Length: 67
Image (cartoon, rainbow, N blue to C red; front, side, top):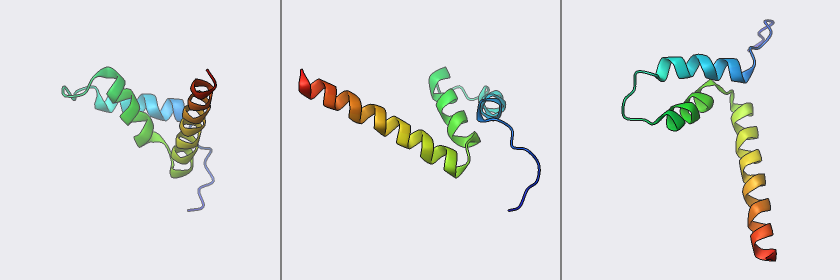
């Protein structure tokens, strides 16, 4: 895919996706926001989000072990 258009930033795409998910009653607002972020992200962006989450999880686990 060789798209020459500039990519819209992820927060803007996630906000648009969240607006599409507003009508779903079975999800809380936090769940809707999380799903919107995942649906709006590209595969590379999703991988970066997962890596950042794991990095935060690992650093907090190490700090709990040191106490």
